[in-house]
Image (cartoon, rainbow, N blue to C red; front, side, top):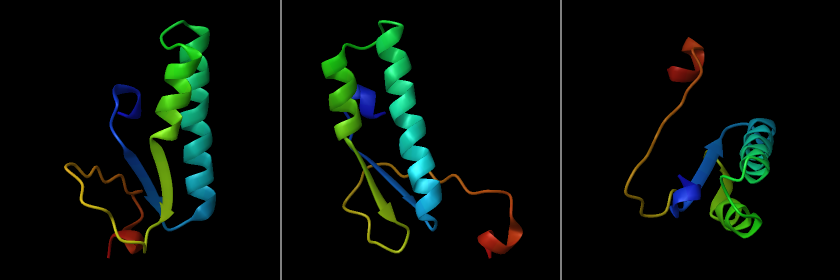
Length: 77
């Protein structure tokens, strides 16, 4: 979504999971540059539109929220 110009907020209860998510997003942009799907400046701009924050921080006014929770019942309660 950030590749298409939208601001993205990545949140999780675990700083480790956030770091892994950011690394995965960065790798996707790197791969996109290698495959010529993005220019380097487009990839950099896409990454700059991704912000990370702990789950207990308030969300700014947003138009869309996508929740992805693990299948651990204790997390969903």
